[in-house]
Image 1 (cartoon, rainbow over the protein chains, first blue to last red):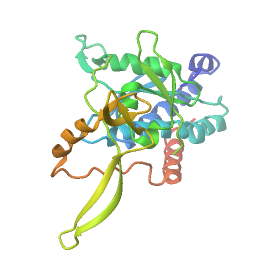
Image 2: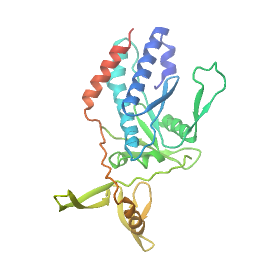
Image 3: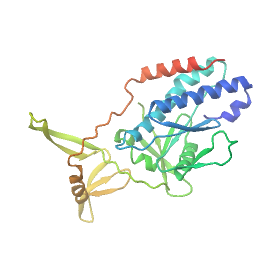
Image 4: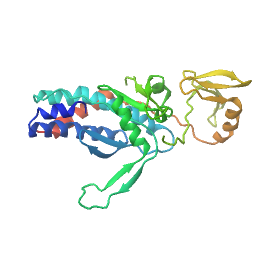
Length: 174
Length: 101
């Protein structure tokens, strides 16, 4: 979700609850509809993954899912929250491909005592941070695996500061 | 950087000809998708150059890979959302049904 800190600071607790619940629940639903699995939410952000299977449908689903999330935000979520007198809601999406591993946190006081680590998570987060409002950005590793129809619509937007790793704007309309 | 294990080569199928209609056998020509792959000769080797990824796939490499495809099913993917408007309508209903203010 974009600009959530500023927006949330202007909302009362009930409004904040509606704003966040509407966004997070629907993003999780879209993720699941496209074959992804939600891993966790972190504030205003949903983190999910698509298990790698044979073929490349899973990679294409990442793209379709991200693009649909943007459309759902633009056409459904934002108009809905605005109809409730709340500010316009916007998002941005980041995705990449790679291996991650789960780690178990020992304290049983933590509600979800599993976490995931791996470069792919760091890259996806950094790439997401480069995207503008209602845009989907992907890393090079994922870009190289997606369907050519999508690939030819990807615009290189730069390289991550800590290396030579390219990221792309998915300028494709379903 | 994340380790990458997969390589994707989308092909375009042309020149489909029936070989044995009773058995459902046919022959076709599959070429790397020309939107991203172009014919090039580099250092005397002929092959396909990926215009975005800057990867060169020689004809020799393709020739070596071809036998590994024997007997494998063709992977024709169903890319796209079948009915986007219907999906958006269901999503709208979901949002309006879930949230109360």
